[in-house]
Structures are given as structure tokens and as C-alpha cells.
Length: 202
Image (cartoon, rainbow, N blue to C red; front, side):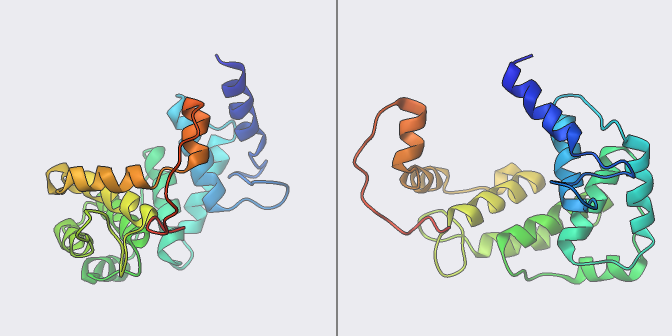
């Protein structure tokens, strides 16, 4: 194994909390760091050393009230990674099914993944909203195109049906214009002259 990869995996394991879950530094665990910890290890066919405690910790959280969509996204994905039972109140599922407008492409992505895990029949409705925010340059964003919005939109559409993605050449051109001098230099050693632009967002 590459020495840098080994160091990275050791770093992730060192973030495991003795009572379950992961923490970024010292302190109590949270679902965000636990989600990323589990997913990173999953990429390399590894499991947390505190796997059972982590599962028990997240399962206890399920008995609490349903928090904001991001927290629900983390919880469900952690349990789904371990093929564990997911309990979601019927009232919350009704709210998920009724949702057809979102504050951002990132939030829509959370809904897509959660709906997919729960096998809800609302993916096409969410896809309609995502596609309604595609701009003439092929990219996505409310008001103006942004690289982050475009990323989450494409991730969502790939989840539902890749054939929904249109204007691929325009999307690629938009992404190319968002490459920074620093990024190109790191990967090619060449420092080009690129016009300043704010089309890519933050």
C-alpha cells in the first residue's frame, strides 16, 4: 500500500471514538465525521475498529426526533453502509414525498440519496426541479451557473438516470473554464494565462 494512503487510513482510524462514531479532533463524535470516516474506509474495503459501537450509537440516534435533512442524510447512509435496519417515521416520509422545491442543488442531492435508500417514488419529481435550474451554458445554479451546484446536479441525475443529463458538451466547457491556474499547474507543471471569471461560484 502506498505510504501516503496508509497514513491517510491511519488518520481516519485514529478519529474513531471509543464510544462509537468518529470525531475530527478530540471531543464527542458527530454524524458528519462518522459518515466521512465510514465512507473513506469503505472505499478501501476496510471497516471501523469500533464498528459495532458505531452502529449502536447511530441506531440510538434514530430514536430521537428527525433533524435537518443533512443529519438524516448522514444517519441513513451510515446504517445503509452496514446493511442495518433504517427506521423513519411515516410522517417524515410523507414530508419527503411532498417536497418538490429545494434551497440548493446540494439539498436536492440529499433528498435524492435519502429517497433512494428508502426506495421512495419521488425521484422524477426531484429530477424535474433539478433540470429546471439548468442554464443556457449547460451548467446549473439559481440565477447564475456555479461549479458546486453543477456537481451536485450531475451527481443527482446520475443517481436517477444518467440519460437525463443533456448539453454535455456545454457542461464540459463550463467545467473547463472553471479550472484554476493553480490546479492546472499542479497536474501539468504548466502555468497558462486564463482570463479572470466569476462564473464558477465559490
